Length: 221
Image 1 (cartoon, rainbow, N blue to C red):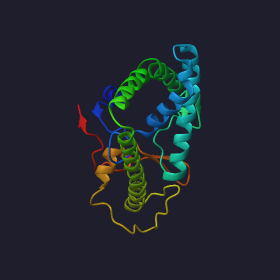
Image 2 (image 1 turned 120 degrees about the vertical axis):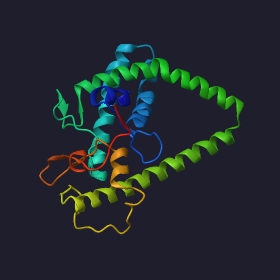
Image 3 (image 1 turned 180 degrees about the horizontal axis):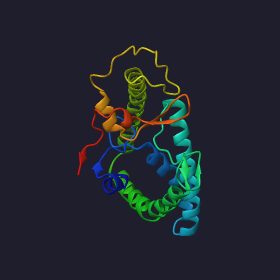
Image 4 (image 1 turned 135 degrees about the horizontal axis):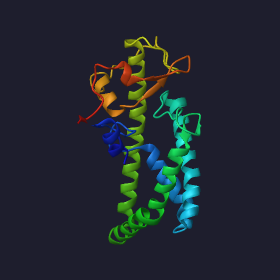
């Protein structure tokens, strides 16, 4: 949905993922888990699903934004200019979208997924599923740790190359490992085209406005 939204609003196909590898977006993954765990009991009660979905979605979005700023020193989004926003981390418009997504997830999507999971479990052994879950978990952990390391390396490099102060990043710090060969500025910007950092004056800096010499989209119409 976000990819389609970007096509209509920006005229390009761009990345919307969180990790370096795989089509994984943490905010939606965690959001879906939290919504499923808290709202399944209200299946087909659309008013309750919508209202509680708004609350759960806003909490996930707010905490996701806060954690990203504290630990990764980046902003994945900023709603400061949107109506009824909370510290730019969430707002009424996206809360309403979370409500509609919750209805679709609880009433239509998740029941189908559960049905096929039950069928697959019946046809395979529990040991197979334990192996699958363990393998996927380890891969996701590795992907997450690698993403944090590479992103930190990228921000230090950008801070030094473009002489900007990034809150939480020491511009005089020297990268012990040069990752620019495998994770160049262009690759990082194509992975995170809308990445925002905050300077020491608490001002937002959109990296796409600085790194104008690199492409940050897959295809432009």
